[in-house]
Amino acid sequence: MRDRAILHTDGGSRGNPGPSGIGFVLLADDGRELVTLSEGGACIGEATNNIAEYRALLWGLENARALGLRQLSIRADSELLVKQIKGQYRVKSEGLKPLFAEARALLGTLESYDIAHVYREENSRADALANMAMDTRASVGNFQVDWKACANEERPNEVQPNKEQPGEDQPGSGLSSAVHDAPSQSARTEETISSHRNEIAMKTGRYFLTVKDHFDAAHALVGYPGECRELHGHTWDIEATVSGTELDEVGIVYDFKALKADLAAILKQYDHVYLNEVPPFDRINATAENLARVIHERLAATLPPSITLEEVAVWESPIAKLSYRRV
Image: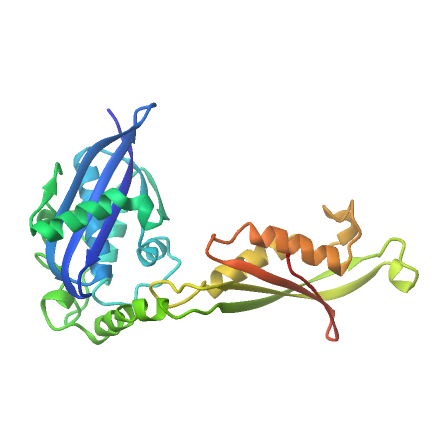
């Protein structure tokens, strides 16, 4: 019995909020090519883009469960959804909270899964199914579970989302009350932000983001004609500056926390050591120049393609800074 598959999901709204569609594709690798196990597209009525993305994920997960699939590689072109599922973004919208809870509960029934953001062209079939459903206002595909069954509040115990407190949005027999009723303030704010994304995208410009961290270490400059050839120490302050031209669905170019975490992981290996004994400085001189270049190379490898590492700066003291930029 096949229990591993790739799940592509996509959701969209024409108007945000407006008429919305969702799509999913379940694929398996038979050793020669990818085989479609199940796919579907459905028109879900009025919703926002983000709610449609979550509905698509839930529908895909339910169909995977119906096929007995226990291990999934999930691919979606909503960076917001992917980062919320991975715990990198908080779920602030009351309209998304019950859908997020249900998705995490369903994912918890799997033996294993991974989830990653892909660009729209890599998610074309799920996107096409969602648009086909919106165009025809009908469901398409060979799905095992209808999307409306996934929206039913009467769920099995193992996938029942946590109930919100009275007065907060509840998952209903369709879309959440944030869609059926007047949207909450947070939902309206989210929709207002989304409605301006195209306007912002048309404006040319580049955003620069800088984070700073430090470590304490000793070094000796081999061959230097002065006292710095002897063992001595510094508190090294390191600045990293990245840039990008596109904002994500939240309206940020790159997460400060992600950049700080990546920089901290690199600097950790240099903290409270004798740099001349730590690779690659056991082969090259532990100068500020070499340190800046090595950190730049390692940090650049952690960044997504849309983000450019502009500069790494090394401060040996409050009045001495060395910067490295790749040309």
